[in-house]
Amino acid sequence: MKKIYILITALFTTFLLQGQTVLHYDFTNSLSEVNGNGPELVVLDNPGIYEQDTLGEVGDTRKWVYRFEENSGFQFDNTAAGNFLGEEYTIELYFVFDELDSWKRVVDWKNRKSDNGAYVYYGKLNFYNIVTSNEAPVATGEYTYYVITRDAASKELLIYTDAEVEISFTDNCCDALLDEDDVLNFFHDDLVVQNEASPGAVAMLKIYNYKLDSTTIQNNFDDLAGNLFYIGEQKKINTNIRTFPNPVRDKLAVDLSNFDGQETVKLRLINTTGLTVFEAKADDRNQVSIDLNTAQIQNGIYVLIAESDTKRATAKVLVQN
Image (cartoon, rainbow, N blue to C red; front, side):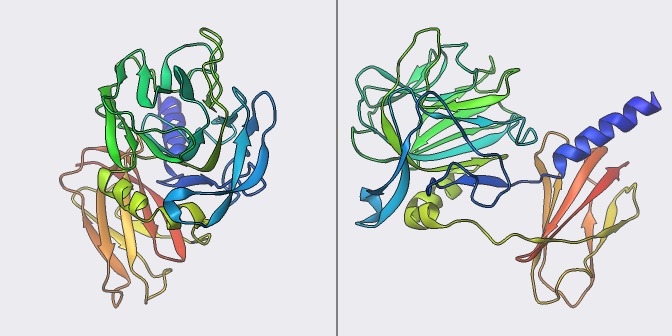
């Protein structure tokens, strides 16, 4: 039993050390992740082309996009990404469809083995065969800010366009989770009812391993130009933190002496499902340590993530109240 416990602990720790982060694809002459933190996207069917396009909602500024043929999108390989995408996530897209008659596939979680999934249906949002939006917010030839979020605890799936929730349902059947193939397909339809797809172009894809809240999504849409053209934050230097006592009961002391004294340090405690259960911020950097109140936190294994603008550190924490 002890060996099994150690193995489970190691698996949880490997997963949690990823923390809450994002993979960013901006399609500037490449399907690569812009910071080198994720796998290159895989072309499905015919390769697309890279071209500069004018994005109406950000003025006359031109940006590189990936233009794909009908039913020739791309694939995100979650295994290659180290199982980055779990039960809670956000998918953020900025794309355009050239055709909107009938169903047009956006995202497929089951690698072409199921007709279920995210579509645009005559301009309306659709998650087949569960729900269709009342409005038709997607227009032919116009780029759409499109966001999918899934909550691990409630299984609630939301789909937004232009920061407005258009679809909401409880994903009890796990239609919006990856299957054993562990890949996520975009703009490439299934083999059950085939060729429900449109040619088009995509200017941005971001995949988060956590759920964005509605306020953040609204802020991202309000600053769409910054969201589209921002390549990503500077890579942070990995450093070390010490925590004591560990195991901890009601108070955990965290040594922040390896962080720069002028920088604010944000701390998060992540549970084994990847959810943040506790947050704190060290603003007064005259002190080299901070005490965290863990009295109300359930017993279990957690990962503490400490981040400043330039540095990042993680530590495993065992809570035993």
